[in-house]
Image 1: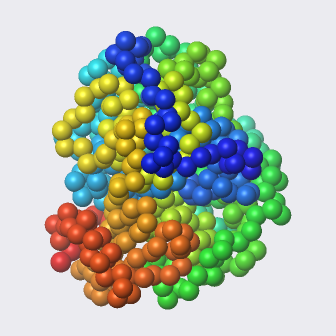
Image 2: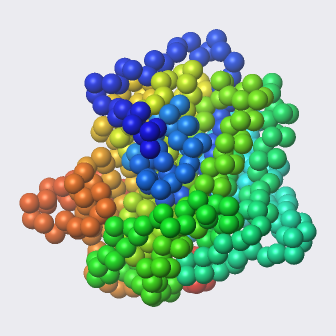
Image 3: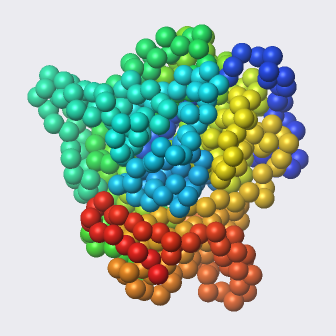
Length: 484
């Protein structure tokens, strides 16, 4: 696409080109808008180089900001990833390992921190909090979301669907990907834009931090015919769709045993991907409506905007679907930060980052003191040209099915391990990929003698991770796992 030709990578020679405007204290308090989607493959939008994706609003935001091409989820499953983002801490620290774990009230979220500084904090849409009472809020207002609102009772969808006499797909299988003849706004995500418009109109004079969080393009794979037709006959199989299954981790083998990924035909894979692309484009349209409203209300200039996802979607890559793996399609996330009045846009940064870095970054951007103990690292020095960010690295954890895994990656290498546990006593699995020469992660180099020093360095970085201290309640199996 033409827009991609406009991007210039950030390198040491360009770090002073952002044009940061100083004297934040003399300016009006900065608003923060975080737009988050669920299960968006990091490669599947136009600005990321995808040849099929129709995502003009994500692409425009990237042109106006900085696209981070090496961004990762800190645990590629919904609840742990989201709680890590809100606290700036890793799963092991906050003890949120799977979708059944609540974030306890002894951890500070960025809503807590911003509220102390006169901000109004709100989430419109999904956040997947567990627990009860304040554990469903953690400092945020919830005018429309997955607790104490229309979504939790299903009223939004029910009202819309009853009018049409329709139902939504409930099965997650790509094999059953469906095209509907009714608008996608009947889905619960359809309430996000109108509720966002109301929130913005009521907070023109109040500094705010707002998260607009979409469930789509998370499965079930379902799109209206309008969006499906944009991709019908255009989408191809992923390069690695027939990846050698002998190279899968034990965790991925378990996922395949449960969901039968390897039984999908080529036609079914392509059809499900066409539908998935349609879901992405629908979300992109909603993002455009939110950004237009921000502009219409006169708030855009003084708002720092972040686009991200809680994790990716494999979408047939490596013959896998969904998440819970450390391959790029699952652990990687789209990640854009834009605020033209503070730093130059139209840039791609290779600095390694993730949602855990949002908390310290927005504190620095808004001039708010960061609480002690954050494990995320602020991107503000990268955005303002004070640092290149080339030496950054980041972690991700996962405990699917009670199998503890940890990943560490930098700009050049990705290394991840799976440890044996009480339920699955297998030999420790190690994976090493050269992300420069093998971005599709086709050749595991972990056992190559000439790369022993790389593995040792990655293991040293990972030494903080102590799976032996973890006890997990796996909400899908109702089993408790203790790791040796």
